Length: 158
Ligand code: RB5
Image (cartoon, rainbow, N blue to C red; front, side, top):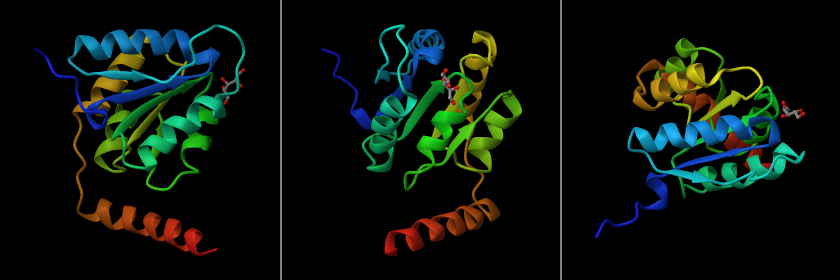
């Protein structure tokens, strides 16, 4: 019997209506490379508000219930604004493969954001694959992330 993967090993994925088609394609892609996508909506084509789908995903990552997530909306801008409101989230909006790699190597991005009206499916798949395969380079980049974490700690005290 194949056991279900723990939720922490899954990759949460969510979108609004403008990113839904790309979400469906990326789910198929993820399964094809042995990953386990956790689809957190939206399911239909009707117009919805991206925070309603970005917030639950961001909460899961913020609470350590899931390590990585992909968020999609029309441009990716709205979803990245939402996700980066949460502690421990480093959401990177990417439009090219180099940025997707750097988002992990330099920024240790735990959320990848893509615009469903910007990136084609082939590019989106390549960006996801690159981000998943990349490794955080630590060193001076960790020092920089520590400075960002300090901002979060100061905000907590307010
Ligand atoms: C929806 O029309 C669009 O505004 C949304 O998908 C996103 O691009 C917002 O940033």
